[in-house]
Figure (cartoon, rainbow, N blue to C red):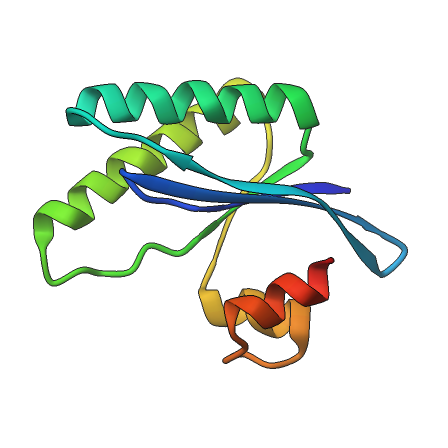
Length: 125
């Protein structure tokens, strides 16, 4: 199963694709979608790039980090707008969509819920 994982943001959205077969996880690709300009342009750019990634790598599942409740309501609203892009793309392509907390992802990949990003990256590679 090919899985696309996303770390959503309005200026930077991280993505990683892994292949999971017979209890083995292997790295496919990863990167960062960087956007500048007004919010509407950033949203459009994120949509287009995610659409291209989904078309190019054909993931069977999309996974996002559970949104963190910000102290700044404006930031939370903008993150929700980016998540709306993902929901639209998964809906249009009829792909399963799941949310997991960062701790759940780290625990599943490394066996330790407080692993660093570097430890997670090494386990996937």
